[in-house]
Image 1 (spheres, rainbow, N blue to C red):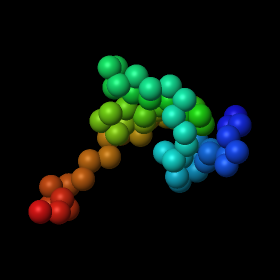
Image 2: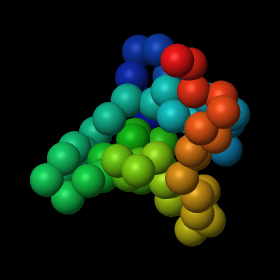
Image 3: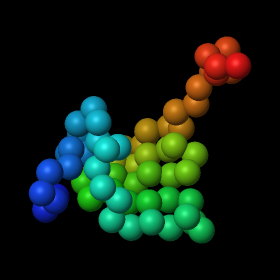
Length: 65
């Protein structure tokens, strides 16, 4: 698990994306957080329990102009 001085949120916490990056592969479009979450550059996520969170897209009418 996380060994950082300020512990990172667990993978099942609402703020799990705030965990530190431990592996970064921009050429492949993904990075691994210390809590085991894999984030992709399209905002898709794979959690350690193998569940997938689809891309989090902002609807066009909610984008500030």
